[in-house]
Image (spheres, rainbow, N blue to C red):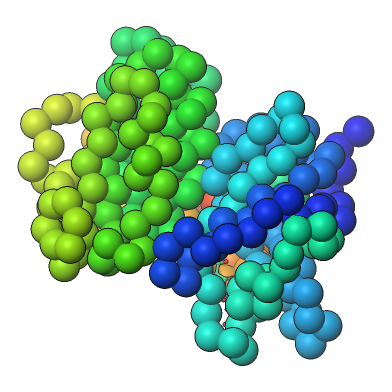
Length: 262
Ligand SMILES: Cc1cc2nc3c(=O)[nH]c(=O)nc-3n(C[C@H](O)[C@H](O)[C@H](O)COP(=O)(O)OP(=O)(O)OC[C@H]3O[C@@H](n4cnc5c(N)ncnc54)[C@H](O)[C@@H]3O)c2cc1C
Ligand code: FES
């Protein structure tokens, strides 16, 4: 039976980059995870903060019923800061897995897939790359960060087969100097499918360059409340019908490029 809410157990938590934490949790919900790009809605362990925090699933392991989340914390008044204080063995109230993730069923060995990720949009692309590895397709992965201190998951992507990986930092402290859109503009290849997650400016650049590609998948972010499609806090305009609202939590967070107006 599908579970939607669970008290999951914290397996580990550590700071993996400046103000970015990796939280590993264990519970039955992991067995319900289907597509990379789905998210969990985490209750903040502080009663004054009622709204849950949506965080993408970075990777999962069904054999151990564990999954990993990477998230950036705010100052001490924020819910993410309170979440970062959770330690091994504590419980965290989780809803999920929620939303529609990145479709991968059509990918075959013949594809050359491009993944473009920026900052704290990179984590869901990691589970995606792990699953695409099993399809035996070629992958080019472009990751952009503000600076080296906030670079995440590079070593994990580098371990995946058939991946050509390039990393950019805005200030040039690591890898290519410039934003990830510049790296993308320099690409010589024509991908057959594109998957992206990151800041709105980066998503716009990817959408502009690859608008002609049918399998262009864009993961969106929005302020959320209910997380399950009931409150309409997270709406985006439908590109085909501006009067129609798309809900990021329920219809997304991943949309086809042609569905959304960026
Ligand atoms: C589908 C989805 C997946 C996400 N995945 C990740 C991830 O993997 N890693 C990560 O670091 N962040 C992710 N985010 C952003 C993350 O949810 C916000 O950074 C976080 O909620 C901010 O909470 P806070 O406690 O730090 O801030 P506060 O200032 O305490 O938040 C106040 C309220 O604003 C909301 N809010 C603030 N900033 C954002 C934001 N950028 N997006 C949505 N709601 C926001 C909070 O959820 C909360 O309800 C994701 C957002 C969405 C919608
Ligand atoms: S957050 Fe309530 S409808 Fe999306």
